[in-house]
Image 1 (cartoon, rainbow, N blue to C red):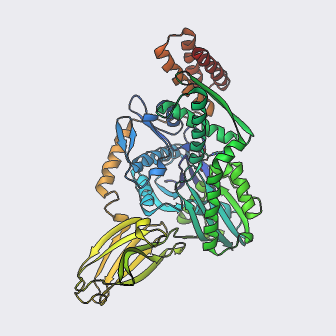
Image 2 (image 1 turned 120 degrees about the vertical axis):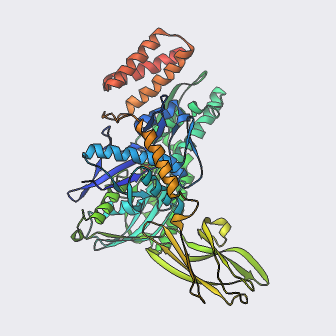
Image 3 (image 1 turned 180 degrees about the vertical axis):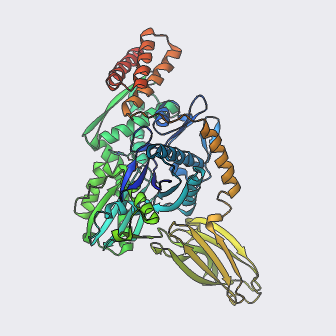
Length: 575
Ligand code: AMP
């Protein structure tokens, strides 16, 4: 029987979880890892890779590798992998496909159905793109679940008797979400959510890269901006240093042969890093203010702060959040795994894997206001492009609301409904979702006829709009889900066929244990090979061959030893 799973489709890493004897557990990938990098790469022989092997080539072949595609979901951007182009939805489809196959391998059973999580702040288009990605991977997406809501489920499952206010602060690789919940008798009631779907650890990395690049320009006179490979190595080193700085007071960055005549070594202190990211961290506190105000909950009454997302490990983040609430945040929930575990719980609620007696229940809210464009009058002036809210943000979902709008011109026969989401009074500052025109309005004097517009926002965050001409009862409807900017059924099957074909040539997953060390050495080998194409060095060649054998054999001790030797050899060659 197919195993239902929960999937955290992350900006940086993705995780799969399932319910085992009523408890959520992580399903390891084919390499034995608990998470899989959300990276897709095309290798020299035209094979697609997902995960650690793709991430390893991010350093050597950034032109054929894509990371953080989640940031582009729901946009019309195109992703280049060598000579091929993909939509962000297709790239996410590839990630999901790899997760599905790995999970099937680990479980010895098929995986067909999943709850997939998204940041609460994902728009309608981003949610739909995520659903489409699931279908491209051959998964039935049972539910799109907000990440902080999933994290709250993982937290709440062990505290069914608690009665308290809880804040989930979720800072991941590319998105930030905060949710304010009220818990009582096993019910998790999301009161409000706020966030920024373009803020995360990736921004911390980029700030550090900018800082390092300026230092290289100052010390070596080299501007690395145009050097994609050097920039990719710098970015990887910056991320590593950032992570080290979560435990240590300083981190060494050592990049031999970063660019022609540039071997770069420096030390970054935690204070320097903190100063770089301080402003971004502060901006998350503004979101906390907004969510608490919407929830009408005073911060002093919050008894638990649950930190989620890899970037919540940054000490400055913890410090600022602790100062904000005047108490230490909770750390017993694994920040990397809570979302996937929560998704598995949600799947369990759906399939009955978690019984009703367990008594957990969760409600969620619409993260932003939904409405239509209207005209308004200011004195004798007509103001166009005014936003008329229909569903206010943070309404509990599912929610259905109706508003009436009158005709604005004499003899008007049709009405155009333009749907937006956002918080501004003017539609130009909000996100346009869709538009359609209904006709059959009986001609009359301006303001005499009216249409009733009903918005229904479901638990997946998908909007359905219906309208009715009040005097005639004529109905028209639009499901944002099926808007023309989305993939049509034909497009979806064409894309799926293409991915089936291309994925078919992907390597079978090799069940070896993951290691940052062998990835590091693989990257170093690639740099050495490049060097060898320009210079001949028998000793370097021998080291490269030895390194490749060590990686293939998974010989840890040798990998560490050869990493040092190869670094030294590259240094020597440069000097
Ligand atoms: P997530 O999207 O939740 O997987 O979070 C990934 C982000 O967390 C990436 O930007 C990582 O660089 C960051 N991250 C992971 N571990 C750490 C750590 N120990 N310290 C700082 N940032 C981290």
